[in-house]
Image 1 (spheres, helix red, strand yellow):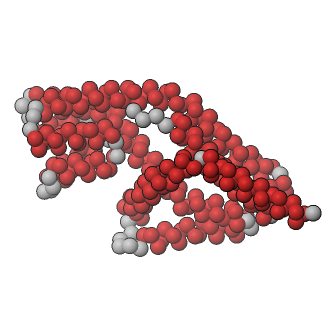
Image 2 (tube, one colour; image 1 turned 90 degrees about the vertical axis):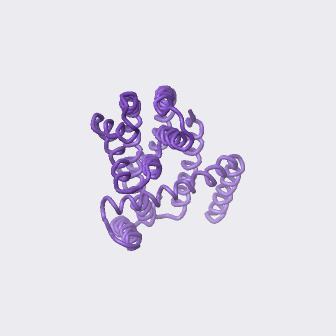
Image 3 (cartoon, one colour; image 1 turned 120 degrees about the vertical axis):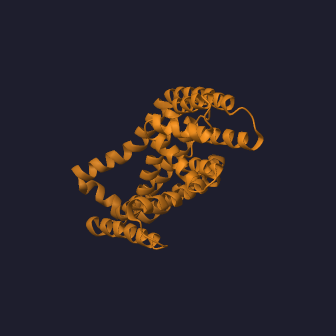
Length: 288
């Protein structure tokens, strides 16, 4: 009887997974094709940034050290909990948490630069109207504006003074921040330097574009904030309840973490959480 029940549960799980993949095929295909490749590129860049800022290990040895640290977290979870599932959770946390924190820090810095961009470009335009050239106007902006925008353009000026072209220094600025408004600014300056034109008028139009885009971004964030908050609550509530039950009544949760059928149920839960995260992100994602 128990064998038939297990076979029925496995068959039911197979049918549910198959129907779900069929129903959300286009969404999952888009996510795998577009997002996973982008995530892996960002993950590799974040590893390099982590090595530069925290470890400073020369050569190609950092990836080996990183894998050893990740495997160490897996051993801690496996030895102290006795559960392979807890070990795998700690392994994934040790693998992706540093990259996630660095990416979050980069996005916050880019957001701060975007919030200061209108004022900084206004200072730059006023300097150009006063008769200064573009490099001197950037020096004025670095001197008058607070961090982090002054620090970023200071790096541009340092690269330029050390022999790099202004175009390559601006390209490095764009690759560091990954901001669409910085991309607009860099593209406008490079086109003006290649084809000519009134740089003051071009930067004035860039200021208007950035100001309007930033206003629309704020409006979109306000309209989608409730949906994003609800998605985080829905995604985090099962795990919070599981953690509370593990702490309060561990004898209720340990069979799920140790029995094969419990691991299958957890796998189904993770799969549905993953599908729900993709769908909710697609619904609340609005491009401006």
